[in-house]
Length: 140
Image 1 (cartoon, rainbow, N blue to C red):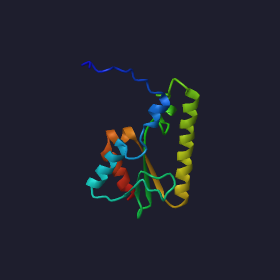
Image 2: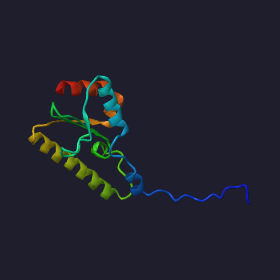
Image 3: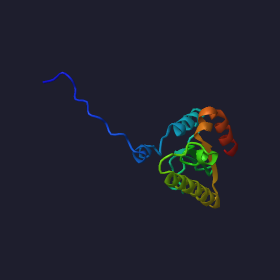
Image 4: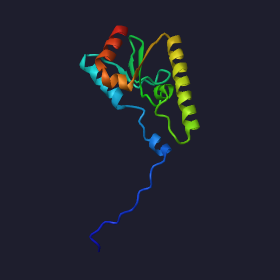
């Protein structure tokens, strides 16, 4: 038996396979914001399925729904003209545009039901979590 391991070449992942591995719950930005809120003594619901859009963080008594949005999937990079995939561009641009539309529809539905809605970009949460918490506290 040979002492050398067989080296099999791994096939490169397609963009679709890569994108399918992106998490939608318990992302780093969500956890960062949730931990900061918890540390300040706030209690909340996570990924609240009873509301349209399944907000990431919900304060039921205050009727406040919070979404932690990634720049790519929720269109910030698209609107700024950066980070647009170079392959199958038309598909990805349309997909992200539809995500933007869906976000607006969900916000409108929640507002009509008497909820207040906050969105935070991932970069915003990472760079200035304290400012995000202060904004949430204004609504609470």
